[in-house]
Length: 166
Length: 211
Image 1 (tube, each protein chain N blue to C red):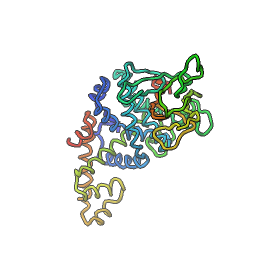
Image 2: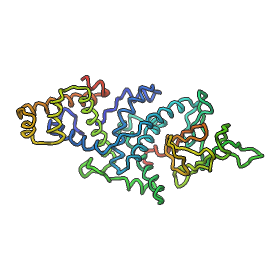
Image 3: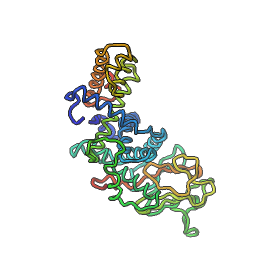
């Protein structure tokens, strides 16, 4: 349909209708939670004082509080134990949440992909509200990670938006 | 020819309301899924591509889009293509093999489960084609859903256009004349054409339906 719609014949339009039905047969409806995740992301992202471009986690400390962003370099450990002189092995992102383990989950950059790993947390780590706890999963932009009573939205590297990047 | 509502893009670039985003999502949801499916991705992977493309657009896509450098749909499907490549790389990892970005791009190119473009697997064309098909499907679907035609007219149209049956046999089956079969086809196509023209001018689906 590169020509203007007014210029094509009825037969050509009928053929496009036929092809569209064939094409659509191969397209399955996406799970409805995608739109919900996109909306959730939008609400939190707009709430940030400055919109970050790099990878990281978007989250709220408590509902109705300002959104926060934790940048991610090569590895990020999230849990209840905060890093300090006494606990140098504490988490990069510490959350005051009794339902989270001291070291709950980590995200690591492996071969250009961000891999989420559960660190044998007592209450488990969940992805995109799936009922089954994960041990390891490759993350994509907008994935929702649930740990304890907290939820984190993963944001990837925006490099792939640069022209010619793929 | 996926019509991008110019004003919608401008509104979203300026921040946009929830309603604007809803319209954007609804307009491009199926074209992006069709584009992903045209690269031999599974149902789950197609859904992943949709999620990733939408978030990337919301995050930085709109801010980076420059209308002086090209069409919005071209830009959007460039982003979608990057997400297809990412999906193929994730698949590689699941299957225990390393897939480089270049290899993934190559793997995804031109592998279509159904013929979207005759002998032309250029990603931009594939994207455009997938988008067009999805839009025609939605326009027709909406016309039928809103009862723009009598059920009998729709049945006659579907029989000769979608099922591609012989008009003579269809006429016999419906106990009508061949002329009536052609008239039903012509009427639906004329309305569809008006709707597509309105979409091309920048109307959204609801406005186009009223055209």
